[in-house]
Structures are given as C-alpha cells and as structure tokens.
Amino acid sequence: MMEFATFLFQGLAAFVGTIAFAVLFHVPRQQYLWAGVTGCLGWLCYLLMNRLTVSTVIASFIATLLLTAVSRFFAVWRRTPITIFLVCGIFPLVPGEGIYYTAYYFMMGDTAAAGDWGTQALKIAIAISLGIVVILSLPQKLFRVLLHRQEEA
Image 1 (cartoon, rainbow, N blue to C red):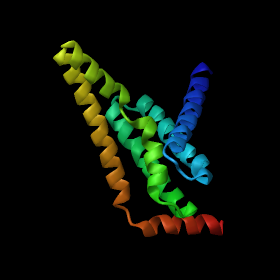
Image 2: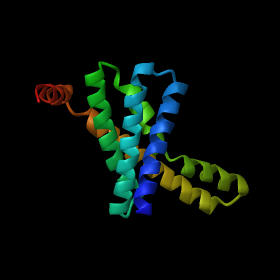
Image 3: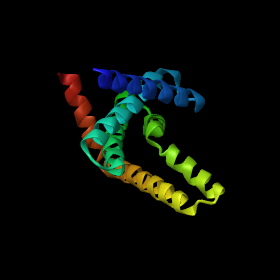
Image 4: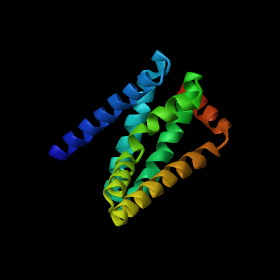
C-alpha cells in the first residue's frame, strides 16, 4: 500500500513539475493540463519500467516512446505544435542527477566516479533521443486516424 502511495505521489509531483516548467517557458495557458498529463504519464511509465527491467536506460527509452506518442496525439487533438507537450513532458526524464554528479566528481578530482556518472547520463540522454526519433518517424496520418477513431466512439 505504501508503495502505491509513493507511486501516486511521484506521479503528482511529475504533473506539477511539468506544469511549472510549462509556465516557465510560456506555454499557452490552455495547454498546461495536457502538458502536465504528458509529463506525468512519462514519469509513471518510467517508474513502472524501472521496476520491470534491470536497466534505467531501457526504462527511459520505453517511457520516452510513450511520452512522445502522447505528445503527438495531444498535438493533433489540441491543434498545437508537438514541442509544447514534448519539451515540457520530457522534463521529468532528463538525467539531471547524472549530470550534476558528473560535474561534482569532476570538480572534486574523482575522475573515475565522474566517468561512471557521465557515461550513465549519456546513455540515458541517447535513449531519450532515440525514443523521440522512433515515434517522430511514424507518419502523422497515424495519429490523425487514432484521433478520428476516438471521435467516432
């Protein structure tokens, strides 16, 4: 039960954090909710995949696939550029901890730890990039068809 509450709390934190990021970057006010949902779904998918796989990199890749697909769907549905949802939604997945500790250990003179943290951060960044590329390579027509089917239901 405690684990489920933590899961929900982290989802809420990702939602609020993504909306705060959207406000900071002047996203149109009517898109705040959907940007927050995008970030929340991406983070919850990451948490779930992190539980099911042994690799943070794979979890980041799968979460980015979902997040980018949701961003494309919202972009078509809300008639808004995808960057509104994608840039805000990716915020919770960015490997900030790895970047921070890479710089920290580098400045402290521990190049081995800096290299370990830097390598992990780079792997996650590449996984995020590949996840975005995979979904963006899908034809836009696919997302219009999905939206059209939803409207008919």
